[in-house]
Length: 143
Image: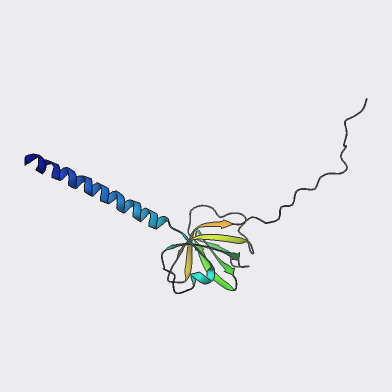
């Protein structure tokens, strides 16, 4: 009987450790989930506030405002626009300019503002190589 009582605290300790690890794994997965939605879907009544979302759109002209370590701007897609406040610590990409395409990742709050933790700006879709010089000599010098 004494050996059974000695095993009980050990088994309870193992159970507590396994329960804690299971809870940490589940909460970590829930926290890292990001749902990709459109601006219109974000405004629907089915959206849960304070959940991570990723939204894409075009940066509205004249809306980029840098103040007090924050950057505020507006993205629009298919006639709907979304106010975004960037609260991240990384510097914003240089390609985030009026009319550029951007993907914001963060949380949509009840105040109607999307608080972005990361911002990605899409590069220009058209690559134009530098012009080659045509007046340069083409062959090797002759002797």
